[in-house]
Structures are given as structure tokens and as C-alpha cells.
Length: 217
Ligand code: C5P
Image (cartoon, rainbow, N blue to C red; front, top):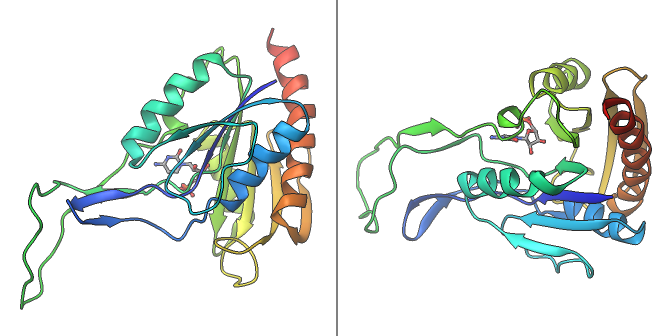
């Protein structure tokens, strides 16, 4: 199968030397890309700036901003069977990008932010030929929020993790996730390394996407 995996943070520029970003390390997405290659799949990894080496055997496409990620995803899904949206996309960006470095200031000031486009929600909903996996990082009411996103973002499955814990989730080598499906019962993967979680996720994604794509064709 042809996998497109997105990973890492996005950077939204403020001026030539400053940006808004988040703590995502890219580890979970890179581990999924690695596990998918190991399982014999063809993998395009669309990555924001991450400081970990790219897994061998994947084609890497580097992006910086949420707009670049949006365009890269839309291009890549024309030719894929599975999209795994693991990237931590910035939810907002500066309304304008200063062309020159902003000078230091002595008094408080506000930066105007505007929402970025929701990439998952922008994908076609009808007659889609690829299986979509979303991620949800939650600090509370994990199940309710994940289920709401599964529907609102029109995903086929969503992988939710609790980021209020310091020993799993963002930046950590470990994670604990619960997977929610449209029709099947949820499945929990207890705390373990992101590499083991990635292998398990690739197995589940391969099985579910085959079922779902056969049903659609
Ligand atoms: O709403 P929230 O950011 O928690 O949703 C997370 C999921 O949505 C992830 O799969 C993420 O990659 C995706 N996302 C997106 N476009 C955005 C923000 C998040 O596709 N602008």
C-alpha cells in the first residue's frame, strides 16, 4: 500500500527571524513511517522541522508552514491509499508576516493571530479513495473530544493520546493511545515505546484500510 505520513510541528513566521511553533518532536510520525516501510509499504513522509534522522526507505518531503503542509498533503493524496495525519499543525498564525525583523519594544503589544486552515477537514469527503487516520492530543475529556474530531474531520479512525501526562505524548519516547473507529469498538494500546505503538498502528491501519477500501470499490 502507498502511505502518506505527516509528522512534526509547523512553523508560522512572525518576521524573518521569529516564528510560532509547538513542542512536537516528530517521533511518533517518524516511527509510523519506519514501521510502514518495515511492513513492506511505500511511504512518503511529509515532515515539519524535526531534529531526528529520517527513517531509511522513505521519501521525505520537507515543509515549514501549515500552508505548505496543506498543499503537500493535497498533492500527495492524489496517489495514496492511506493518509496518516500525525503532524502537530499550528492552529493559528500571525495575520501578517513582517518583512523586516521587528524592533525590540519597551511596552506590551499584541500580535494579531488568525486561524490556519484545517487540513483534514479540507480533504474530499465523498468517494474518497484513501483511508484517513487523524490524531488527537487531549488534556481532558479524551474520548468525547476524539469522537467529535473523528466525525468533524471525517477521519476513518483517530488515535487519541493524553498530553497532560509528562511521561507520554509530545517529546517523549513513549506514548499510550486509544484508537477510535467509526463502527468498531475502541482499542487501547497501553504505555509503551512509540516504535512498538507504531508497529501496532500500522497493523491496524493496514487491516482496517483494506476492509474500508474494498467496501468502497
Ligand atoms: O483539532 P486538533 O488539532 O486536535 O486535531 C488534530 C488532528 O487534526 C491531527 O491529525 C492534525 O494533524 C490535524 N490537523 C489538521 N489541520 C490543522 C490542525 C490539525 O489537519 N490545521
